[in-house]
Amino acid sequence: MDLKKYLSVSPEVQQALDSGKPVVALESTIISHGMPYPQNVETALSVEKIIRDAGAIPATIAIIRGKITVGLTPDEIEYLGKKGLKVIKASRRDLPVLLARGEDGATTVTTTMIGAALAGVRVFATGGIGGVHRGAETTMDISADLEELAQTPVMVICAGAKSILDLGLTLEYLETKGVPVIGYRTGELPAFYTRTSGFKVDYRMDTPKEIADAFRVKLEMGLAGGMLVTNPIPEAYSMDPDYINHNIADAIAECERLGIKGKETTPFLLDKIQKLTGGSSLQANIQLVFNNARLGAEVARELAAQ
Ligand code: PSU
Ligand code: MN
View 1 (spheres, rainbow, N blue to C red):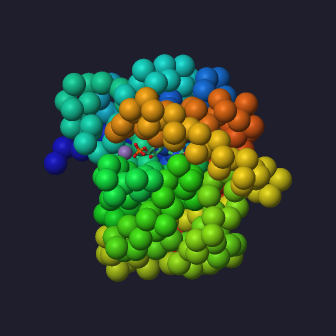
View 2 (view 1 turned 30 degrees about the vertical axis):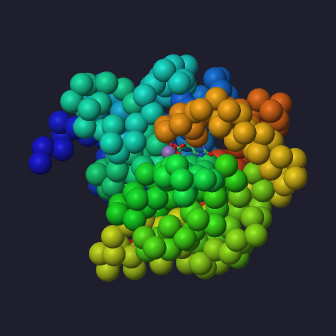
């Protein structure tokens, strides 16, 4: 396999990996499809700074001119942020076509995990993951993120999943696929905008070291797949559950009315929720990503420390 044809790792990230320094992967769908411009670019650049300040090297990942690029330049981040929804949202099934055609793509959790694994990055921080959508028992809309967690050895640190998803079914799916779900300093699955969901995680862990230790065992044993670390939004930024859930329900109703399906569903819901809440959910979203980036750097340092 000639990976060089398809993978481009920035000199800084490659050097960090070669010398065993901690690296944290970051996705690009959150930039082009998850937040509006210019907050998306500001957030992406701030996240990189937070990771550096915490002693790790950030590696934002996207598909640039037909290559899975690990470690974007600020110009590339600006380009993806400005182009927004016009950038192709790239999941696993899109990779062969985009790479063959030499096109650009924003990587979802799925494809960011693939890029990270190919480059040798083990820790990836983001906002929220995709999961089993409400009504999936008839639509079969289940994010490819869950299958990727089942097969690719990258730890994903997120703030739980939004209640645009069926959180109970998402946990069942992860259990079936053998993906450990860890709560950082909580026994309850956080629901992105809120710290609680009513669902339990598999294990609570209170230190980055515990998380790194468990993941190291998974890697050393060659158990396929990743690990999901859920980190609740800081109290100061968490939203009122009734308020946000009411708006999420309205966004889902609108999505159904318009007949939106497939890969457009998640970006539509994210945008609609932001509009319905007058931007307060965007602030929460930005803060929880910062919080996950900090934890990502700490865990990456623990993993690198041995
Ligand atoms: N959830 C969020 N913000 C996001 C996404 C999900 O709160 O930006 C993005 C991620 O890139 C995730 C993708 O991998 O949406 C999932 O899309 P789908 O549901 O179509 O699999
Ligand atoms: Mn889907």
